[in-house]
Image 1 (cartoon, each protein chain N blue to C red):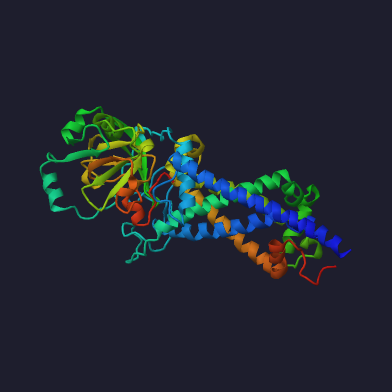
Image 2 (image 1 turned 90 degrees about the vertical axis):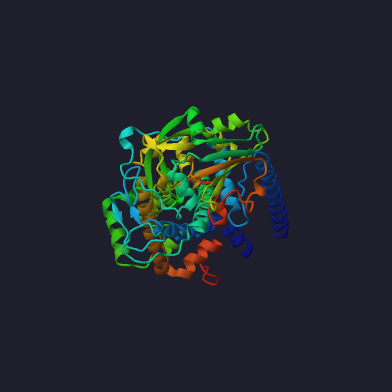
Length: 245
Length: 252
């Protein structure tokens, strides 16, 4: 009989193998993109709107940090070491890894019912009353109940959908808008973003949103039980060994 | 259990073998069709090859956007260069009358052109964006001779794969593949916004490659070498950029 539960668990793990694999590959890619993105940003910590902007033009806003280029007036009288070379190589390599892994995940999500079953919130959960109580539960940092070891709550579902279907596509789109060759394939698909500098500015804000998501996500994992939740995302088992009913 | 795991082992093994073979075949095909950049090293080779191959398959003939005259930047930024040598300054004082563009390598008729000769060639102009890898950009009207015209003039041979270009500042050299070199928007620019190209912006002669980032647009061009073997130049990575840690292909 023991064999049957094992088989069932292998067939219906908490997180499917594809989900677990793509989750961690994208985590690694995202961290590489984040570190290298910050390095690239340091070489010109000024933001603009439209197609053009440089040290001779007014900015939309500046980030008050020193720069890795002496040509940028920052108010600091020192220049940080230039890390753009390897940062750019790694940024684009990690972007390929993230996008290809993301496509695998998206194909799995659509064709194997993962999005519909696990991420689409039930209509009843979207009523203002239910949503308000869910938000309240989060704001009081209440620990989730037993059922949430096996299923996402509605706020979680909405957040994941936002990240997967809004933030990720937007950061890829604005990233490609900074590639002169990619833009030349079909310029109108990128000029709608408002120009190269606008795309760069949006890229920056979307990355801030993703960092915010990552921070809250990790905080929530700690709150729900770090070992159990991370264990489930690595092994697919919802409960630690010995706790299994 | 053992039956399942054996079957699993066999299928996984077959899939892995197929994957490795597939990668090998893909790499061989990519090499044959010129889809591997010269700086495809160990660490970042996969990413660079994916970008370069994707662009060569999708953007071989695409044209960058041209802007209206009203969008020409009033405050373009000339990224500072190392101090120019006394020889350069002498030439500048003489109005670059002695400036030569030498063209050699795999060409039927090696040649050397003065700026006056270059200006007698059909000229082309474009109002396009130039963007630095650091993040800033400006729009200008660039005019000059299409590189393809010069390559036709000297009779570049069919086995040519790259055009190496060098600057008066000898630290700077770079190369373009033939797709980029023959692209109608790739110019040897001699003019900017209706007047002679100012020295801070690369005058008297600058490579203008609008489908790639600013650093491919090398200033003060003195020599073009057509070649089928990029490994013979510098450290064999295609340009001075990878030797300084930056990618050879800058179409991103």
